[in-house]
Image 1 (cartoon, rainbow, N blue to C red):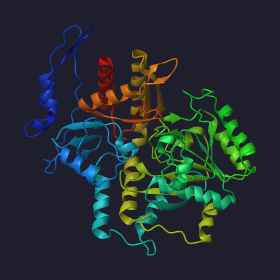
Image 2 (cartoon, helix red, strand yellow):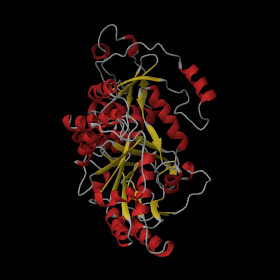
Image 3 (cartoon, rainbow, N blue to C red):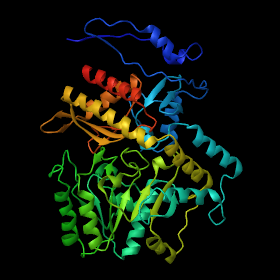
Image 4 (cartoon, rainbow, N blue to C red):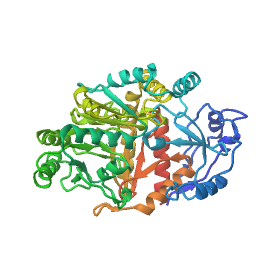
Amino acid sequence: MQRFIFRRVLPERYLCSHRLFSQLAQEAAIPLQENEVVIPKIPAFDYCPPPYMGPPAAEILRKRKEYLSPSMFHFYKKPLNVVGGKMQYLYDESGRRYLDAFGGIATVCCGHCHPSVVEAIVNQTNQLQHSTILYLNHAVADFAEALASKLPGDLKVVFFTNSGTEANELAMMIARLYSGCQDIISLRNAYHGNAAGTMGATAQSNWKFNVVQSGVHHALNPDPYRGVFGSDGEKYARDVQDLIDFGTSGRVAGFIGEAIQGVGGIIELAPGYLPAVYDSIKKAGGLCIADEVQAGFARTGSHFWGFEVQGVVPDIVTMAKGIGNGIPLGAVVTTPEIAEVLTRRSYFNTFGGNPVCTAAGLAVLRVIEKENLQKNAFVVGSYLKERLSSLKNKYEIIGDVRGRGLMLGVELVTDRKLKTPAKEETLHAMDQMKEMGVLIGKGGFYGNVFRITPPLCFNKEDADFLVDVMDYTMAKM
């Protein structure tokens, strides 16, 4: 039986006032004896956060329970009090550093507190925090122009919102107005938001309240791991045509889908699925909506947008999360012809297009390009996926490793043949990894999928640390 040797150096919070952690770590290295395993150490990082002077975690948790919604939940048996962040790292109240492999739910793309994004926010806030789109301001126009330049075809008219839910609500309304139909087709296992319309498009009971949700049909999910047709996208697409033929008048408003389902457990749609579905939808008079809230903004590495992986061009694209690196910002982008439907009445969003938010969005685009973050997501993501796949070969509990770029999923099962979800094991592993300095998310209907969506500045050292910690954790389970 393998013998684990617990060798620790001083906690990093005690090192900032002395020497760099990398120096001490190097000095503390001891040659390994046979069968000895050293606990993985977080990569060196030349930054020390200022001392935290706020209330402790226990006090915050007490206030949360008393004054905030009882529906709010938290990760970990012992909740983490995050008080600071820098690039791909987060810091707790004691100054301990953690590798952030969740990115605030695929939201932080450039890195926590990226200096260029912070500078844009501060400068714009000092100049003008809010006015209204009833007046002219260059920030919203500049960002709309830059955003349109990243999209194919005639997708160049931008409506700004405050979140992904708002963006998807607006997109669905536009599709209904343009087509004159009410029926929208979504996918089982999808998540598109939690407002009236988007909750209807969402197809996981975990996220649906018992309220009226009409006008949405849910097609078979083209899930290569658990789906009935494996990786045959065209077979799944036939169900969409069946829904059109047998569940509607033969005409539909549209189809909405993510190229990689995020909340659903990092499920990349089976190859060939979207081209066949888009063809059926267009013949039925509908519009195709690409939900890029999680997969967009270079996260997939191979492409800037997730839908590009399947070689399609949607009629409407929705986005949020990575668009602002953590600023509340979302957008709907469509063609001039389709955008005209909103002139039939007055459509207005008080905070959509806020100068501070759009200044941040423009800074994010510039950082992605200047720092080649799409290429980094591809290179580091491919390396990370390869290393995670090697763990699958080592541990039976890992049923699947999937995704692309820095949007990866690791599904845990107690039986590979039956694909029995390892729900408790997933929670246990997350807790153990947190104690060792790695933060990851979870998702999927059963809550048994590690969601790995770090900031796009994640490097190979970070990837090694993540996998080594996961390896260490799995070995002890």
